[in-house]
View 1 (cartoon, rainbow, N blue to C red):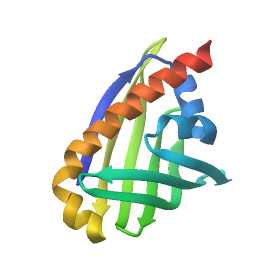
View 2 (view 1 turned 90 degrees about the vertical axis):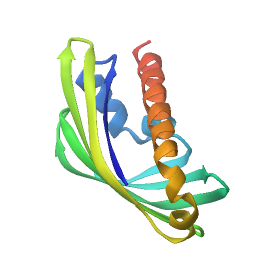
View 3 (view 1 turned 120 degrees about the vertical axis):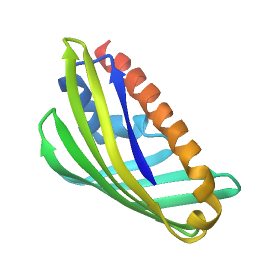
View 4 (view 1 turned 135 degrees about the vertical axis):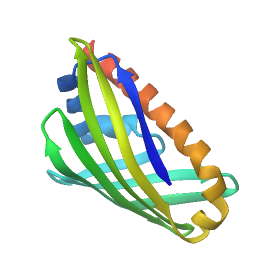
Length: 149
């Protein structure tokens, strides 16, 4: 499944970057994450739970940051595994400053599902991905508000 879009966030790229690179803040922002632990500068251990229609799963795996261009862009790569299948994602994220206090977040990537997750959940994934993306940006804006106060 191809995942692409953009969202304007009320923050400068520097403030946004700090949250996206901090595991504590990022765990608050990404929907359904139960833990996010930094293993190295560009690798995190992640655990999350997800419900896709009748399918529930607890996922664990690693999340990697590649092609880092400070406060401008990075690639996020992850492989999450569960008893119901695996989710593999590769997403490019670009931060484009619009003015002193707004940044456009542009994302473009692919998500691949396998196992029962792909068989049962594939037809529902698009809608769920859109909902999770919306939750991510709402959580991100809330976290930016909290950290700026």
